[in-house]
Length: 335
Image (cartoon, rainbow, N blue to C red):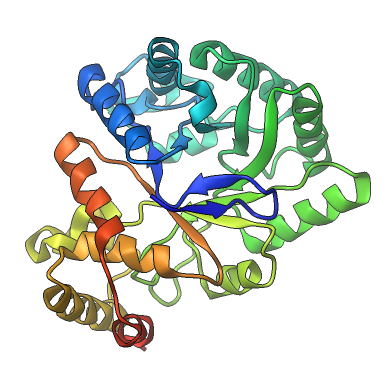
């Protein structure tokens, strides 16, 4: 597995990051551990988790299961120095009773009940994450969900203190609009605080449909911003949109398609199917390969396999070879 530089930090992270969100809940521990071992043995080093993972899988949980599993794996394997470890804070639910109804999580209520990115909240959150992970620092610490109710100065000063204390080496941001990201960077420059080096957003081969307002999906403006600010690396979550590219029947009516449906998506899906057939690869793997081929901005796809079979299918993207003409066809497909 090749590596790419994270921003301008000099840090080399693997070109395919491993998302650990459902490890310890949906994915049983033995299967998750095998996945982690195989990923590192394949040359991978970029692990991604969060303190809130996965509260929505078990009623009564505040999350932490993923971090705890990784902590047990690190303790058993002794591989802490082999991995670039990222976690996140700010999206733990404050009041669980307010977000569960009839045994199901209400995501609208959850967003209104996130603990947010206040100074004390973040300081307590990083300490909790380090305890569960069994380490004295993480390599990258994200604000998981942009918190507009807390002054950015408060959040950024707290993050600077976390970095200064050696509890995180770098910071990142997720689920944030471009204008907020620019304001964050201006404040960091003004006060001498560490600026984000990674932006984690939803990004895939399909482009979000016209007129959609969505804080988490990369749009043209954000891509343009990233192209001109190469000190930020885009970490693309949900790159294969829950695996919908491989199965036209699965795409029909699937919730993951709601943000993308339309003529542009149909044209891009047709181009994807054509190139996948030529290359003899699955469309999901082709999407991951296409993302890894992007140079401006550089993109690190973040896979989140549920099973070992899904993990192996994702890793097959590393072997996909595309011609310049095929890449051009994929790039230019659509409106």
